[in-house]
Image 1 (cartoon, rainbow, N blue to C red):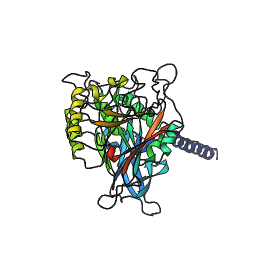
Image 2: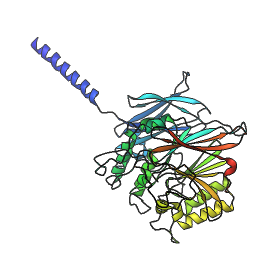
Image 3: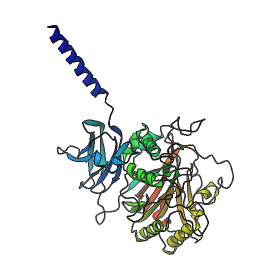
Image 4: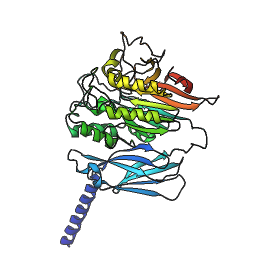
Length: 457
């Protein structure tokens, strides 16, 4: 009898031990979901998992429908799996052959673990040749600094964490464009591949950021603090690893060209084309010399050719740093300081009489709307918007205080984000409306530009 009782007690303890081990097993879920590009009949959903994961599953369905479609990713077959410095794997689910202008719900599983929540996405409408271009809006934001005290510089924290993250997530908009300095690599990060991966993970896991990523489709371009050190250029020795991490952690549909690397790409929405420019991968250290470039010959040709062939009414050119402004601190990093690229590009858009251009940039730790008259006599708008949560640039004097070309009352020198809407007014004229909101979500200014005002005059 004692032997039987001992056996049962041992079996009970062993069973409880196994159950406790299972209960305490660390989650294979790291971060996500993030909604990447969304087209008429296809969408990208990004998820970050631990390398121990074997299978990731997404199930998606129309609200009210009984049928559930499934996409399965075998995690250990993902491209990053055999990279020795990677501790995580970015899984990109591609949802194929969706219905147009349709909302889908979706949920995620990693092995037998359910990722909390049911999320949704809405595909694009086919309006061409059928009806007027739809109204739409998008968020632009730059300079997301998230404090991480052990790796930050001593003293007052540089990051300003506030309700602005929730305001961005809850602001109605069709998609979001991250305009650079999205993660802020520190010194301990850009000295190694695994360090750079850590910074991405830190940003994606941050509780303040989670809602922003699944609220709407996300498109991104980088600037120096996503690419490497401050003011980094093509000489950064780990630029290949940096490029691969950017491609792994973002959901743009394309990156560069088949024969030319980089993060530059193009996408369209309604009657607008968006050109995401890579201002880091090909940037030479020197400026104002014959052999220098910021964009590289191939990318510059790609940009010119795609703008010239665009039939859309609006052409938004987005870069991490300012492209037109050359006053004050802008001189340090802007396209205008690379005279070959700048002169060739401005001459091209002027000679071709390209209409509908609006430049969008981040980086500057301030927000402003400029109308710059170039050396060809043509004038173009540039909307610079930052920062979301890093320190702001407090202009105390000098040429930046009363900058020529700045639209009156558009300078904002604290945390903020932008919203751009394209809509048809009562006269059926298409309008670009720019709004800026501060960290309390108070609207700081609004400015409207008629399509007819984007003709270079």
